[in-house]
Length: 358
Image (cartoon, rainbow, N blue to C red; front, side):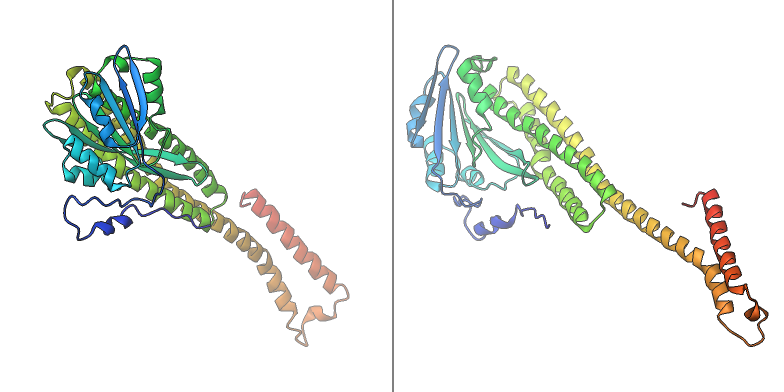
């Protein structure tokens, strides 16, 4: 069975030669309609609705409440263009939103902050890590989040808002941005836990059944860990910029929570490097298992050959049939030679057993 890992850079070639700011979706082809959900809230009230266009979101952004505009689907340039027109977002930012293979980054503008990060999920059926780009546009009292296809990613945040759980209803848009980033980072722990279990199973398989299929699985796993560094490691620089920059959109009270996410991310990076080393050592385990199995086979063959060397020598001597060989006329010569050969075999067996050679 051949396992393949998709190339994350293959579709970027579609934008070759286009001018900067061109809105071209370079992700996987999608036909489902884009969904725009609005959750407008403060301490005392919450209003949740689904709209058909970005323009319908504008009345909510001019209030003192916090507005979360969640857009599921980034494959329609018209919707992304509306975001740029109504929220005065630069065309280069819009271009990055429609490029799902972009590295995590942060851009701090006068009236908003733009953040790209990657969410990860583990597909148990295909034993693969699924990646999705999350884009956040954070204003004074609003957050626009855009994702490709995962519906359930921010469901826990939505439930907390509906049930007035925690401090999220009492905080501003910067805390909502923190909560969204925190959910994404928490999913990294889940993915790494699955990969850790997979390494343990593969290590056992490499020891007990070191076949070519196992070697291919090891190579795929090693490549997966290499690709996982791409979405995770740059996120640390993003959080560093949030904590170091003096932008008024992120208050000092929220910085405390971003520090917590930063600590979690450092723990994830440390775990990732540890698991990556373990995945690389699987090849050494596989090689050792193959060598051990080959040594066992050679040991058995050597034992068999050693048993038959003296017996073949005796049989060769008496197989020459020279005319004046003294034993040729002996009446009991044949059974005596057979007994001698059996005795030699038994003696060698006992000697090997005492030496613990098998």
